[in-house]
Length: 329
Image (tube, rainbow, N blue to C red; front, top):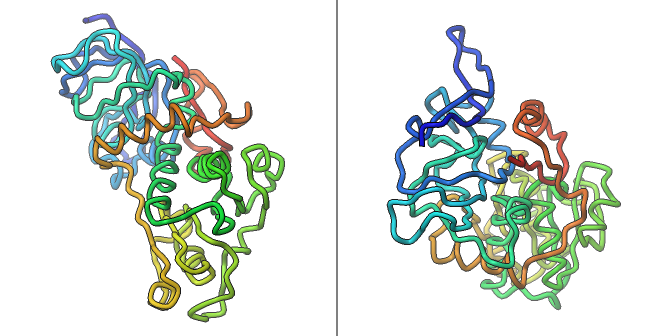
């Protein structure tokens, strides 16, 4: 296939700055891989904003096409697990980071990165979930494995209007949990539509007393913030609760004591979606296509064209997006 297709390309200029432009590319210019996929939908994530801005901790070499989430149709495959016409999802691994990503009409990836799309999950819905929804699902899965049950009490979600946060609110509510949404934004109506039963300012999950333990305020948590917020979530979690951590918007540092763990039996769960084993990845996508296929409000996703993407790459870094931004090809 030698016909050109459109892709967003980020280039490093001679003066050290970075520029973005939609360019024509061919399949032959794509990185190596066994499966070529015609991209139908691609979700925007914070990492994409970093990659598109020249963040060398995310993407080492330029020119580069960002985009860590994609859903589409197999165009060709050298691996017998996939054939032309298969409906698939690709998220995580190195897609869009050091391997040209989903902000293009075609991608070529290793077969081991590809998941067959569940029949009950539309292409659009798979990208409404995307890495954010998958990460939230992985957090909930780990909490359930740790013994978390709805009858234990409310679960607090920090950064609740963000990609992972909003998906976590919706999934928890759908699974029968009461959800406290913690946010610094005035999005009460939006969070209520996702299923939050209580909405609190971010100060609700930030304690500066230096006390090792606090009176319990929640039964568990999914945290996208890190830093003092994560420490507070641990200190104020009720006995035998689970706190899942999957972000560091505020800080990567964690200053706490062992008391929440050895006195209250709190489980601190790390949620790492990029290299999640394929068997678990497939299981969770099946859940998202079936029992966790939550009905999301219309304003939880904004659909744009590839030509409209550029300003959103800056907006997501500035915290000015709401819900999921999805490129529709």
